[in-house]
Length: 169
Image (tube, rainbow, N blue to C red):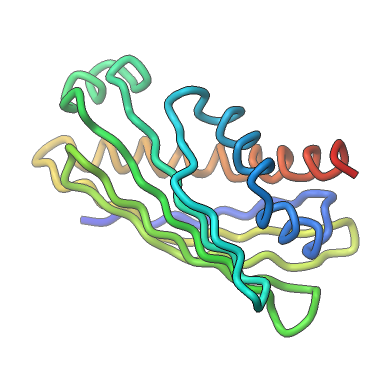
């Protein structure tokens, strides 16, 4: 059974600045280094003529990166591929995204939507989706762990993005 999640986070960066950051290879390389180190790779980054951005990353999940029992359950060749697609809204006040998560080595997946909206102090990101791990008796525990990880990481990544934009300006 899939586990839903719904996370919102605010940051000081404006929507157009966030979209501009998403369109640069340097941003993604810095973000992957900060949140995955040598276990994450940038597979592709496409910036479309309408300002849309499609990015794909892969993370190798080593058993020692996960909590004890979960790490011991996974095969040694487990990896997670994430594909994000972003489109600017009708004005500079909003952007919409979708994501897909697929796994190699574990019968699991995830997907959802993202909305980046302008607020007086910058922007708010809302991420809604589901994650499903089809492993009898342990799937629910892994789904809970992943949903908690997403709830923790979304605000941190929003702050990372705002800081990166400030440093690059």
